[in-house]
Image 1 (cartoon, one colour):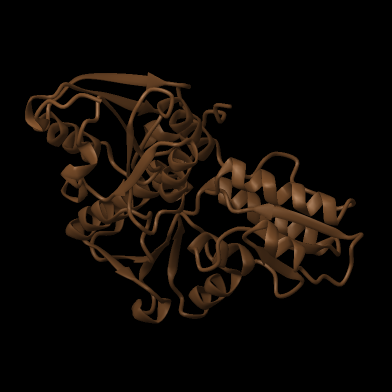
Image 2 (cartoon, one colour):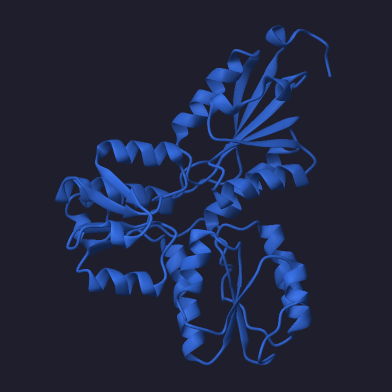
Length: 330
């Protein structure tokens, strides 16, 4: 690396593409915006609609009220369930309190819930590959009352105690690392040769595409910046993947989190963004890096995404252009 002063050093920026908002996040944000237009403020949202402080603050400014539990929502009010999905008990509570629910659960998470309910009714013991405490995991585990085991590592698989070894099935949290899931799935098949998995990989198209883009970034850059909130699972996986590829990688919520020491002697820097991070944050990071000698900016595209998810029927009349649904890019 060169020894020029930092301010005068040329640094190239590579922007991973795809990056940022996925179709599920776009849909969830649209649901809050359109609900505010149709019903007026306040609209209550259980938990963060997506894991982005920037998005949450923007929606709060428009009149959305974010709550942790439904007992904070006045009886009979409109409440939106976040993109991560909820347990069946939450739906039951909402019905008891006569809340008007608008469901912003990502359709790919709903797919996992459907698999869980189908297998449970067929008598399977279930295993979920995911991270304890994540809202999506809590919602998925809450689909059935029992016979559900959570594993987060190969070691968890080795220590797992199940009632049956012949009637087992597994699903995965959608925002995990592809490589991380592969190791755990391999361990499950080695220990339980008859285990049944989903027909299609449960890791969502957007998670996989963004991870593939980071792998390509790692071949060209000295440092990777991942824009995303600390509680964003898919953003954390992107940072971990960059490190796994041998590149210093940092998770930042915004340009304000960048440590100038990370940029010392850097000739090429990669930027990506988690599926909940808006593009405006990417633009701010690029602007900041230009004050440290960054010059050329190049998009590194691994696949073009053209996915859209259908809005709830009651909101389509407000935004007629959102009726079409494209197939996931693979």
